[in-house]
Length: 194
Image (cartoon, rainbow, N blue to C red; front, side, top):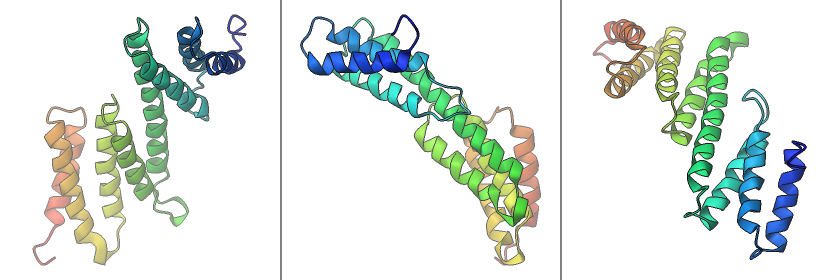
């Protein structure tokens, strides 16, 4: 099955082997190829990622059983690659929410903020970290612009806070100019009477 690139079925057979023969001669290989096959079969980030989660789970189990294995470094590298794929899927969701804005009177900016903040917690070392942080700032800015009068001051303050959070981590980041514009606009509109 593995040779025929039917990785889902192959993974199930590898799984059956290592559960049936936990001390068998090929148990280590079966554990590795169970996760590696699912990695090869992992779908595009825009699709359901159940298989990606399963691949990460299988490779994590492999590393727990065989941390000194010659394939341990490769398994670790594959897990990071799969996590980047999941982070990218979250980024696609954040972009979608941001682009929907206030469509149909829904506050999709809030959804963009929540999704981006969750992604930052779940994938703190992702290469998309800066973009997630910028989308939080940008979404809060857009939310402040579209805000009602009684929430305006609080939301402008949130924009300023997010600006400092972003600038502390990425003082030379690729979104600094836009972040500066958001900050300038929001800080000029904050009154001390709040």
